[in-house]
Image 1 (cartoon, helix red, strand yellow):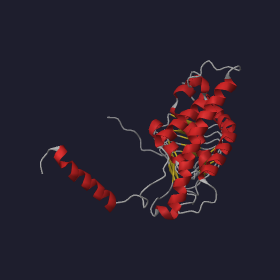
Image 2: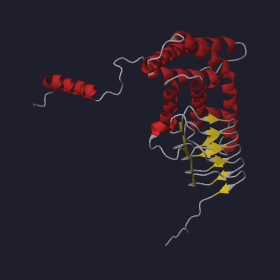
Image 3: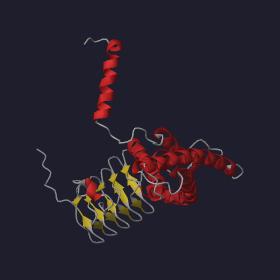
Image 4: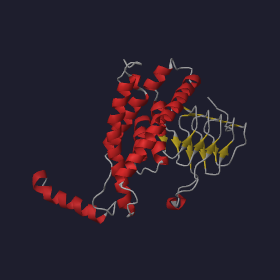
Length: 297
């Protein structure tokens, strides 16, 4: 076989198609999958709705806010309903479910429930921004935090995705969370439950697993993992509590790992950097790692 692409093209095509058929990822030949790019666009639209004056509507005031917000809501509703419908069609097809309600009806219902919760999402985010301002002496203003801190992007996307996750929307919440992960380096599963006034300082490398429960006024630093003890035989662990519970007023410093579904970090505790914790810690604890003495010659 020569090196000429054009003459070898039929061979390349046949080889790839044969590989598709020998190693199928899905049993279905046609998938009603949502459009990933459109879902990401929806996330950006929601960020504009939640923080309009930081996203191109700097002149919005009391005289114009209803008109501007109304237009944005209608625009994102049309996009969202279309992608939700595709997600529900995908779920019905994948599980061979009988259509109890049409995908269009479910999409409409989820849209209504989500927009009803949007003010509460904003209320939580305003407290997260306050937590970042109160917790970071380098922060010059809350405006700076909204405009530039990756933790606010990650937490904003999570609070949106978590609502869809709780409403039983397939695939879309994970698209949202992985978009935030790729953009910020902060990996929060949409199933994780996170309380008020939450702050991730620096953020790179943070992992928060699906069944994690985090209380109010928790602060974590870069490289923290709130994970599972083991993912061997992972399919047997579906729908089980695999990740830890972090109670109120806990600080976890960089590089610490807290693992296991039965692990509880009691309220008002501090977990030192690089700690590896697989069992519960009583409230009010100070956990640190005993290190060898640093030697400089």
